[in-house]
Image (cartoon, rainbow, N blue to C red; front, side):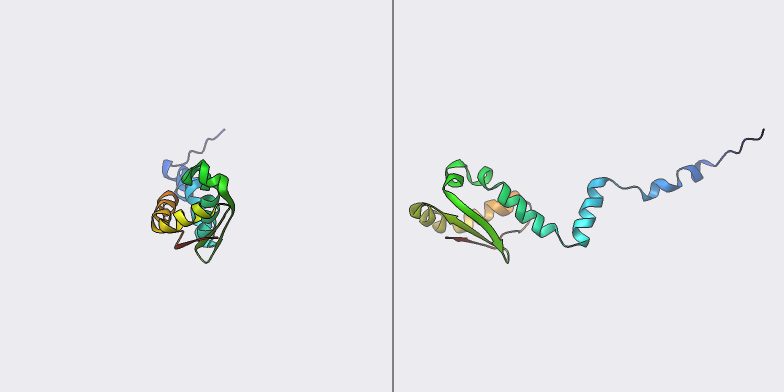
Length: 108
């Protein structure tokens, strides 16, 4: 019986193609241009955590259109207060997202 041994370089040849799953997913999102949409969805999901429970309880609806976040609120005084600090809200949201996801916020 004869044994055939492969060189070590031949055995590890395919490992050059291997990459972590996180990098693969990021490449896929970039290729299909879904990263921005995913960031928007993540931001909407974490609205209550970012802005706090009192604001989240007064929020009726959240949606994005052309990098603008539209926020429908129950409370007129809260809407006025948030309008006065709109730039701070945009800064907080973008910091949490890790990139410039929100260019403007409209309180309805």
